[in-house]
Length: 84
Image 1 (cartoon, rainbow, N blue to C red):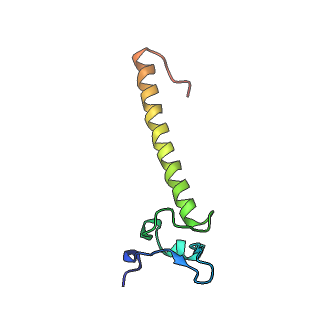
Image 2: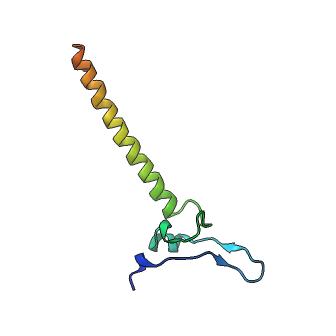
């Protein structure tokens, strides 16, 4: 079976009925959207958090590139030259 097609539910400890966090190792093997529980508990600072941070950084870089292009267009429209 393809591991990327698996869906998980919360792992509940029988003794105290608390949910067990998803460990770093499982986060490396599976994606966050493979959990059927929204806000499933997981060990923070692992691969899932890094992936989200990388996505946010990429989106910010793309936004910065768009803004730089718009700024350059406005500068050329008003006859200003770039200092670079």
